[in-house]
Length: 306
Picture 1 (tube, rainbow, N blue to C red):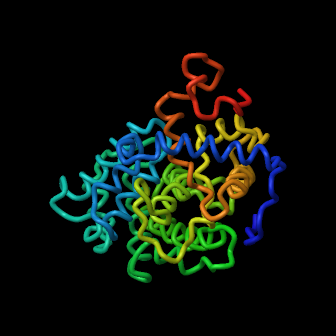
Picture 2 (picture 1 turned 90 degrees about the vertical axis):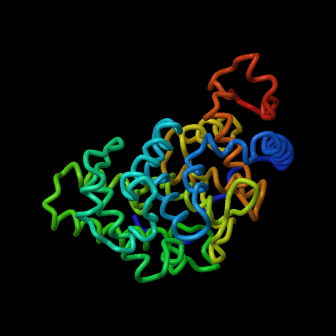
């Protein structure tokens, strides 16, 4: 699959419905797009660190692990960082700059989250060390391949992932890694060129590209309109309820279609409502089926197709 920086097809949503959706989404955002809800999101791991490389790295570890329950993601991300930094005695940025794979594996020990163990995580950190050495930071490395006229970040992200995932594979090869380690690496790096929505990369980019009361910002070259929706199960389900897509799976085509629908509502910032929408899923405020007590107070109730 070769990604081209073309614009996805616009969804067929009437102007009247878009106006109503925008009003209801703004109401939802007013209720949920607040700093007090950051604790329910892997973003809380990044926000524990000051602006800069420490935040980039801590945030990326949390985003890499972002599959499953939010509480487990946060706990395991913090555990991995604590093991690597000796409970915060060292900075994660200094540790990664040193590039000592054997040391990281020793400190991680038997650590595992889902498919990712010490070997895979250490090899991936080695790739980040190379990106930092070559470009000064992870965001800076991704920015190199994203042009202002690219409608999305996909071409630049693919370039970054292919280059540095390859380095991680070489590290695993040198260490005589198992087939499970390679499979975990493929999952962790989530190359968009394979057709996946790359939800975890898109979530991490949202944190650093957007800047408001929730997203900390820090990236100046990538623009909010180039972002794709981090398509998790909550956003997928809610997007179907709102009529933003009729697709049956959470692949890249679905992410592009939903993002384009949000661009119709907010052209310069299609991820404006992402955090608020994911909150009602994570907090259980949207049950996934019509339930009077939960559905009727919802901002999206009158346009929901559930």
